[in-house]
Length: 239
Image 1 (cartoon, rainbow, N blue to C red):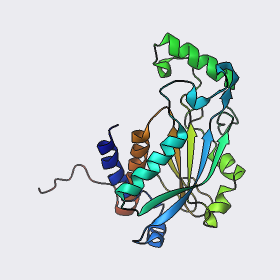
Image 2: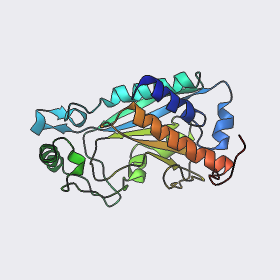
Image 3: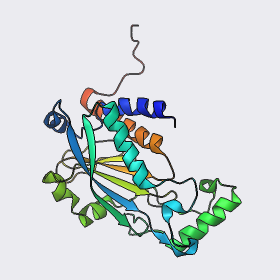
């Protein structure tokens, strides 16, 4: 996506992108705030591919470090510095994501399926029927507990979590999900937990920064709708 289109999307998203609740917005104030992020990057090593990391398996997939940096920079730019992200911790997990039924792709099976599907479909591997698809069943609670996220959010050490995965992983995270006390729909069902509300992004390094900003836009739509009510698209508006 071209830079100007990405910035336009980010401008819309930045209006409420940092708000998990009205309380959070008020605390941030007009001067802006630095929001501390835990990045959980699922990026296993594939001996079958000469030791490549998952994001390197196909040439057009993206480096998650670059994606995270550009996403943060775009939001800071268009918000005039009000939205500043700092990567408090970056965790590389050399495993495939697990779903709520404790199912995950075997690494070898994933690689063989990807290679066969990519060849059979001339690059449109997502259209192949051999993939496992367990839906949006990523086990948020397991991974949040694994890294002590609930307590770290409550203490102010963390404000958000960004998850990076590859495509076609079977157990998909949502684009955005709100977790915490009073969690509500944020482009996915809220997950009620006894902690300060926070947002978890689900990013895919098959895609680019433009799609990450689109996730932020949907997050903004959900929060705006929760605060002000959903728009009435049937209502006639005067020009």
